[in-house]
Image (tube, rainbow, N blue to C red; front, side, top):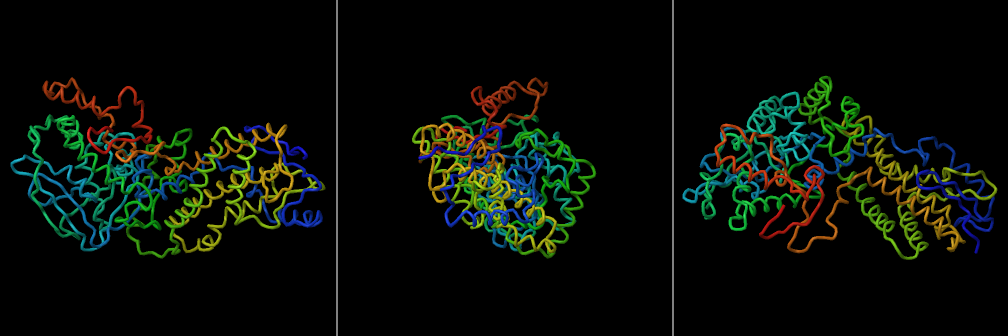
Length: 594
């Protein structure tokens, strides 16, 4: 058996010098050398530099970020992981949608207030004395409510980004000093939305919520129940720290941190259950009670609409992407675009089901990329068999696009260092999901053209990497469906190790570039009495900058504040997990831990 004749470069080179196959070897389906020679020029005809396998995307490309944010809308898991939202989308709450509101007062709000999409969330705010109980309101929509959705963890009261898009809409600038001014935020957002007949705004923290501008318009009362407050010693609103500084903190944080111990776990179990209800919407299809109009979405990753943000993202990890570099001109552009999409929401569009299309692409590649990465990182075993298994997976991916005319060069042809023989396969793979709908661009909204571009850019890079890996495997003699004389070990082991290392680097880089949250999991999987959890505001997050030594703080309030800091700030062993959320298994039963 002849040795492998292909020559490989090391991983850093990212270029594989193509091999000249043995004269006795023929690609499957090729009957003679002449047919191979005649087909090779056909493959190259009409293929420009765009379909070169050695041309990666630009370093400042954002199409993959647009793709992932759109494919993550209204899903709790990815928006908890990347809490600084970059998308604003108009939507509706359909007729018959239930909303919930918890309060200590027996009256319906007569001003803008919050409503939960799941009762577990609203029950956190249904607190009162054991003597009087609390009140829990259930509303049903009587007409489609017009809402505006802010993605990310847009209800997290933090100064480092989750509130950016709301600040710009409400106040025209970032206001980190107003991180806890929720009353001012909801009033000003609702006042701004009046001109567009908006009924509210959708946000997410532990679960999804609606900032409802009017509790008597478009909704009617299903029930308004005086429910029992759990009878736990010393647990009533009167015992919650009420210092003017502590009042700036969310009620759920004060409740949890004041009473979260093994004996009085009431607030913790309530907090856990609202996180559990949020987890129902962790992944696709997300919270379907909010129906989004993707044809009118606005993305801050749109470099044409918001060019001023590009420089601030340079060299930044995605966790740190913010809107604090938005220029006054781009702020005006946002206001103008919002006015356009909210006034003219009945405008014609292409009719493409973008949400399904994005999901189809993600479904097609997510599992296969993860599986191949597993095979590449599975140490031990027969190296040749491992390489062939990966090559088989690559062939599965490219099979729908592997043209009969796309064959490797033979000994009588020129040296093909960049695998240009596979360019047609790359092109077919990259365009299959977009070629037809691209013909509709003339009738697309600006948002649709942005989505089309993001889809094209994302599928292009996926296919560039995977087809390139496949072509390298073909040239290495690893594809048993094309080569008759595969590598046999011995001296070929070093070359196999090189291509395996190269494949691992390429696939890891691609998956890092795509950065799909579906790959972020608890490994090993959690047990039946556990749940996989990402650090969710406000649990484990630092407190706002409030002066502990302030003269107005009483000794009791100061001690409560110190307790609050100890119980909510990350411990010494946790590092910055609240900044870079990583999944972990937590208990579903007391004693709870976040």
